[in-house]
Image 1 (cartoon, helix red, strand yellow):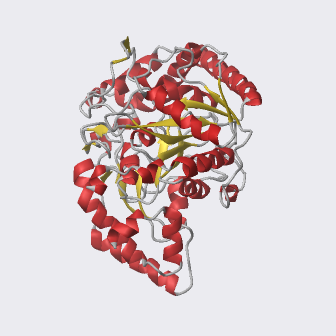
Image 2 (cartoon, rainbow, N blue to C red; image 1 turned 90 degrees about the vertical axis):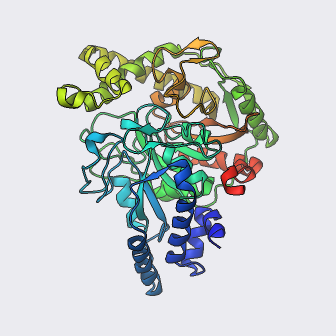
Image 3 (cartoon, rainbow, N blue to C red; image 1 turned 120 degrees about the horizontal axis):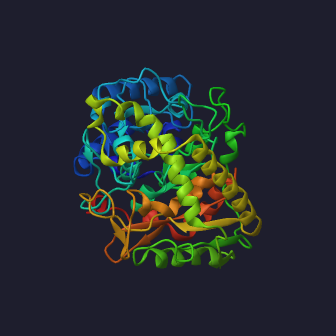
Length: 479
């Protein structure tokens, strides 16, 4: 029975709870059993609360349903919040010993919203130290292992969330994405991850007027679940003046769409600019045939813009925004040694920048957005791989080379996600299958600004045609 419960997709789980076919206590117990069974192997969820307290909270939600009151779609859902976001009563460690004892006194905005519709926060999902690098390991909780091969990385920085989803230890999951952190781990674990456009999901922070490149967003095993969680997370908040006012309910309802005639531009390796591990491009091209079979027009697309210029502008903006947040630690001799080399890199690069350098990079970002806007005049969607390599050894911090080409920074191996990040437009990573070694991969469906609904409709059609999540589950679940 427990396996049947955790095997339900989140929309079906919500229906079962509200129809009183499943109690919140039964759901909580089933998920906690699943976590006890598999989490010691993969280390995806951390800082878990006491079982009896969680069952008691679930019992209280059952009482509310019995009295005719539902908090919302996630009533009784066990949820673990990515350990970069604040959840009241939990430490927001960011994977650093410096913050392992700092307990959040309030919730991040999207956490408020998830709790308001009935989610029960059971713990946190693991992340790299300070969220840096698409490889989830840190000195506080250790490494999160891939759902399909425990000798490999889970990706990151939402690695814990992606593995927890793949292992049916959470019904849906939150994540965040600056340099592919919702897209890369989704691809590495055969689930879905959406990077919303800037402002779609309001993010708490000290700075509210400068558009950040990191955004919060949903992860799920089905497109309908992804849409349902996005509807919970999104919507205007006066604390975030650049957040979007569009009604979140726009993402709910029927996602079926006739794909015939949809114009899709395949960007591949950007004309040879991006090195790719053998097999990545082939899997993506094969996956695109599903769209062609549905009547979409898929063609090779040229970027028409210098991708190196986009990359260099991003590294400057990244160092400015990320480096500034880490600078107080870097300037403190007593704490500097707690920063891993990748964190020190961002601060040191940021210290080299002038205000004029930052403005020049921001201007390039604006020019890139206008160019992308033109591309979406010719194509409804653009497509790129979600990563340039398959999941690699969990002991490897980051790939030093791809296809014989050396990586000059700790994040160059994920350059394929940066064009989307720099555009500010939304994208969703969908599974494309597995290589001969049984390792997963995904591709990014990239849409125009504010086109999350279109992406969800395209992803739903693709899911109906391919069904990778259910077609190939982790061996830990089936063995």
